[in-house]
Figure 1 (cartoon, one colour):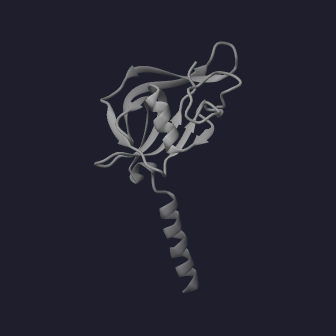
Figure 2 (cartoon, helix red, strand yellow):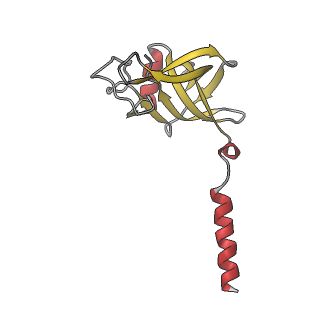
Length: 147
């Protein structure tokens, strides 16, 4: 009897662990973001491709043609915001002021107020993971390292 209970518990754990990401309702979009009020951004989706910047060996993103209608996305205090510049709230300034991951995403962890400050200065290239419900809410915003 104990073996059956353990097997059932293991099977239930396996089912929970193998739930596809699409079932969570989260959506990832690359594009240009601009400010829209105090706690919203407007994201215009674009096709993104990762490539080498010249012959430097460094990676950078290029945003090509538009792929959809603009999306208005809210963000709150729980947002995971990463930017390229080492000083939160500033635009990318080039080496040695910038830090990016191996996939050319922003590495510096900043607060949502810094996203607002950065968007106030102009649009920026981002990767946004958001909850795709009636009122889209951003979970993660990462600035892209551009060539």
